[in-house]
Image (cartoon, rainbow, N blue to C red; front, side):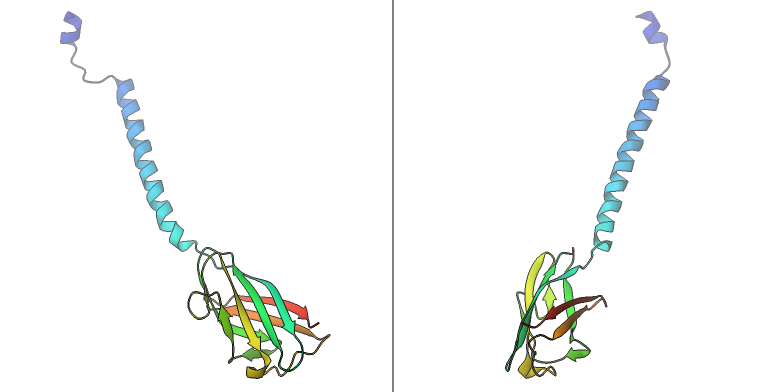
Amino acid sequence: MKNFRRSKKALSPVVASIILIAVTVAVSIAVAAWMGALTIGFTATEQLTITSVTVTSGSPGSAVIGVSNTGTSSLTINQVWVGNTQITAGLTYTGMASGSTLAANSQGTITIPTTATPVQNFVSGNSYMFKLVTAKGNAYQYTVVAP
């Protein structure tokens, strides 16, 4: 007991080292969590998949494009092409949040009637290339032969 009172040391070097290491680890975990929360907003991706295209031949004909957004952010389809012709009128978007915007992890369809587009009719046996261009400039293509 007499030795205990005479000791002037507050903490041993081993205990002080353990406390410093614990504080360093706690601060590094907090910084890592903060940086992780910042990077989630920057890593949002758009990934459009054309799941199917159903073409109806004849007059009036139509094409129904099934799309799926497998990315982590919503995407907007700005352009629809059939071959080398951009479709500017008559498109019908179904299952999309607002207009031509497709939410993340959702599906929808785009209907192209031949009566309202530069494409007059889909001819049975002909091959047609459909291209969708998003607001970010990414292009997605799908080729189908009309039945």
